[in-house]
Length: 280
View 1 (cartoon, rainbow, N blue to C red):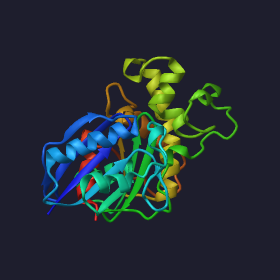
View 2: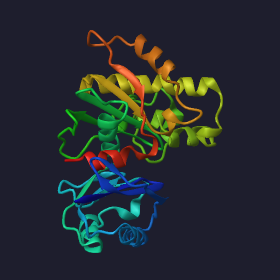
View 3: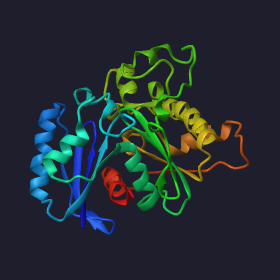
């Protein structure tokens, strides 16, 4: 039997049909911000792919899920999706009863741990630095147990705002949170232009310095074998330079005898699909 995986991001939706051995060419379209329109688009795609040979559907969503994993508790980029009965609606339009919701970053991290830059390692920390900052801990090819999920972008690195008062302007983050200092959204708000148009080396170097604190904290929380970094702020052009991040990491007094390798993600836009097909 086959599986359908839907990697629903804040801007793009990627859907494919397949199994653990591989999947067909993904269907990609802009994610509708309107929930009803999104269901219509999913219904159309399911009909295109066919569901008669499908026994499960995995849905990756960009936000925090309620405990029962039936709906979104928060979704900064898709606020109209919050508290909607997503799992039940997917079951209804697809006719498939086995539907699982998972955080989209968690699926990307799982994909990178199994088929990407983290393959071969037992404990993988995946961090994505894009519009916001997300992450997940993968242990033995499985998303680690968590009550709600992982939100490393919201750990606090600046308690009182003395590091950069302008960083408080970031609209969807909290005071002093990591993604207030390193996300694409924060860069756009701080410099009033898209990150891809910012070419000053000093700007990107300053973001590498801020991110080094977040990565250091992640190492102390999760103690991984390797750290995989993805997202447009890491793998785009321009991007936060990995070598500068490594240099700033070397300046921090590390708690353990060695520092895990820092590597860039390998699966580009389809890490979430790889993770969805690998999900047990």
